[in-house]
Image 1 (tube, helix red, strand yellow):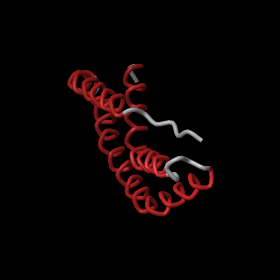
Image 2: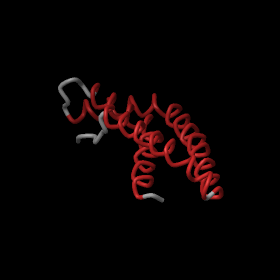
Image 3: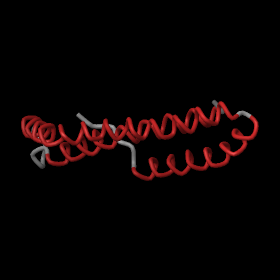
Image 4: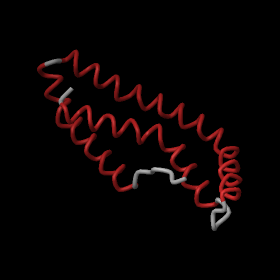
Length: 113
């Protein structure tokens, strides 16, 4: 079973893209559509709070899930007894709250919504 993960370079590129899109569009929004600008600004901050809470939840579950993934890897006959599998899955679970939001924001801002 292979875990699909995004490469860190893709995530960092998405972060840079979202920051650039917001920094270039927000000043114009504040001038021509303050309500939309306020909504975007609130969204920008509230999603970070939500992602932090989700990440804290994942961190609490991480040790148990790590050992479960190791055990599964051993039973499946992984060469390293599940170590790499458990590490990849733990990384993916912990970073998912941020990476999924950044990707969604990049797609949404690219559409102009």
